[in-house]
Each structure stands twice: as C-alpha cells, then as structure tokens.
Length: 205
Image 1: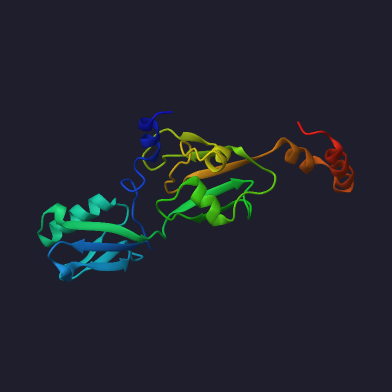
Image 2: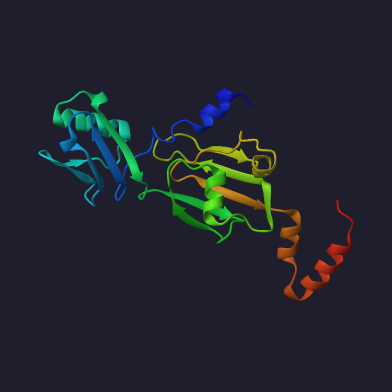
C-alpha cells in the first residue's frame, strides 16, 4: 500500500463531519472578537450569533458553517474559522471481542482504530488482532458501503500504521475472535476445565 492509499483512507475525517446537537463549536472571526464564541448546538439545531440572532448549523459541515457565518456578518469566508471543541452528537459502534462487549460509544473526532480501542479498554483475551474490520456505511451520502481491514497486531507490534484507519461518525468496528476462543465458547461449562487442561498440554502450533 502506498502513501496515496493511506491518504484516501483518512480523507474527510474533518471535512465531511456534519455538526449536530449538542456538539460544542468554537468560532473565531479575524479582527472581530465580538463574534468569537464557544457554545453548544441547541436542540433546535442553532447557535447564537451576536447581533444576528440564532443561526441554524445542524447537518452542515464546518466549511459550510464558516461560509454561512461569513455571509451573515459580512466578512470574507476566509476570515471565519469554525472547529468542534467537543464531539457529542455522533456515535461509533463496536461489535465482537471488545472489553465491555457490543455497544455504541461517542465519536470523538480525530481517533484512529487503535485510539478507540485504547479508550474503551482494549480487546478481550479471545480476540484475534489480525481480524478487525471497519464498515463505513455511507448512508447519508447514498454511496456503497466500504469495508477496511485493520491489522492490530501489525500496528502494535510492528509499528506499521498503514491499516490504522482514522474513524468517521457511525463507523462500525468489528473485532473477531481466535479459533480457540470460538471452540471454547461452544464447549459446555462442565467440560471446560478438562478441555483447558488438555489444551495446555498440547505443543504450540
């Protein structure tokens, strides 16, 4: 995989983020400190813009919001910077062998798969670190889903970051399990101590 492929995997993490309630935005207007603000998007999808009332920002990208605010206050688009101070409106979805089992967790911006797994407590002892996939549904864009393979073992052991994907809101992260873990899960509880004793006596494969 070359650098262009890695860049494509990470493209759009900030550019395509759509703001929602109750994300916290930071707005800076060059030379106009009165319009600088840090505030949460309200339940009505709007923020307060001094002297201009409440402006709807929900469902728009940061670039679109910057352009919208620039037009409202009569400055050039380049004079307005909009950032997300706290990501609160979007989720990521975890499946499989992760600590805490399957659940949704808040999206927190510029996280990689490794960042996320560290934040939620890691993977289970039965997880297969080479069997991790990220599914990006693209429902909002109406595009076909994309599936990315993540080799956690290569990332952690070999420091190879090629598959350490940066996550987007609503990404689904699937962590597979080892063959041994699948077998043990199917064994009746009363037989597990004997099975584990037998397994420990087997030579490594």
